[in-house]
Image 1: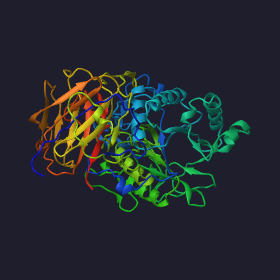
Image 2: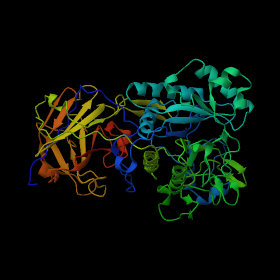
Image 3: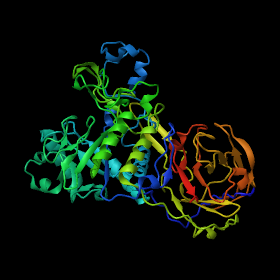
Length: 585
């Protein structure tokens, strides 16, 4: 096509209801390693009766009072040789839980509504069906935590977020603690039908991973749940007909035989296990960390911990089993106790130790960042399939005049979540306190149109857009070649990095955060609506059909940091994800 002009219109329209992204949400993403999320053409359509459960920890609560968080990675940086020396002076004289690293959202507690809302959206985007709370220790159910989560998730659902539902995993046996826990959960939650819209049902009843004997002949409880007792052992598979697993070494087993195959299989990020000892601590020699595989052993190449080799091998096995339900361990454990000796290991950290010896998928600060999150999404898409993308509407010309009725029949509609610009004001572990007041314009959706000369973007916010003079206002990032290796994190152009005047500024970079002015473009803003027009030749889109990625972000705080899309203001879609507009055959 000869040189023409592309008109990009960002329009924020009030007349379109916000929608949560479905299990097959059609966003694209490339992680820091260059791994691209599979799209519909690779995954195929959504498969019925396929479910994902994710182990979730509600432990981050009142036990944090009294001191700052302990982080093994920080302490070991002072003396790596202290790894197996309980008496080394670097270690504080306390058995308090230890973090293996700092989460991206800080050393949070489970009543932090800002974090819980982030989790709700992240796990909805990942198509997780149920989070299963770890209540396997004694009689602890962490009521304060699960009730706050239910409150936040229920509110998110009203905003269109298809949050996961909830279930509980109790001790590995009909112990007195399990009996107390199930009685308490039934009394405080289930018998009251509290947050019933969040209960996860399995075979017609609310699921509980507990041994039926824990009900202690209470018929109300016995008849209320579908019981699936947790198998604690990593290498034996089911030892009774109704066993479900939670973590296994490769090759994993199928659990609960059915006419079509198996009900359940597990996927783990890492396992506190070694060939020499079996069950052992995460800091033991030979422990099956993130870089271990059954096929290749411990992969020692630089940066191996970032790739999730153990995680992927387990996914490949689970996809081979192809059960109804895959249980993933896990999301946000983060902490472990420290013991002088445990399972033959001195200075033992049983469940979490460092980046290699840990099994959390939630984003860490630094290190592998969000790699495991997107790896999980990729495999969930392969397991569950995706919703078919909306059809792209025929070419049409849009006027940049502040009257947005000409967008009414444009598709696809890219949806973003309403209600996620809440401010953060919560205590964290110890004497920490977290605030974040960057939430401003609540971006709820976008559309794209094109004609021979222009492409037009349409975006909506929940309420009227803030004045354009504000910093970091309604920025549009554009990836014109769908290549993360060009531009900044794949983005070749940005609009509104500087506040617009009568016209908006568009900048280009060939590499990294090196933006240079490329031109000035027309725009219009009214109420909660905004539109911008950009020359097509300027963007280098020289053909009739094309594929681009884009993101809208408001009130970013940290330049040249892609993780800020998770932290500041609002970004649609979140994190590294992009909306993909594709007219190619």
